[in-house]
Length: 116
Image 1 (cartoon, rainbow, N blue to C red):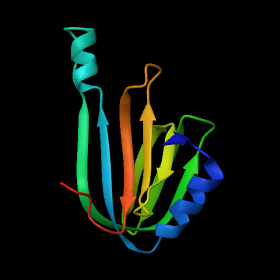
Image 2: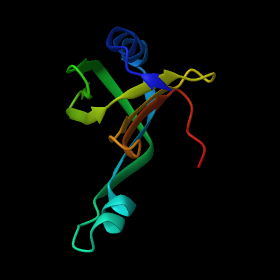
Image 3: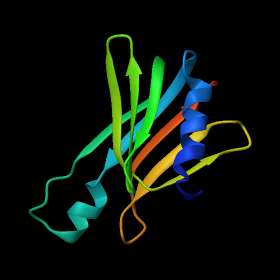
């Protein structure tokens, strides 16, 4: 996984548009927040193998980046993305890491379900 190349990510998003794809979306500050301050509130959102079909995917920003997936009746949105890759299985994997390298957000798309 390396720093986001916006044009390459856009091309990968376009490749999945109009298809049924499995989505993994995760955000967290949980363990980090609890470790850094006893008064911090842990925040997390998680969906794995959500089957979605988006009409248009867009990446915006100058880094960290945001990605929006326009579906028939709404949007999926992720912000704070810094790194990406298309792996050997053709999956688009994007992540956002904080200044200390800790994972803050992940957005992944695949034509096959992610392993549980």
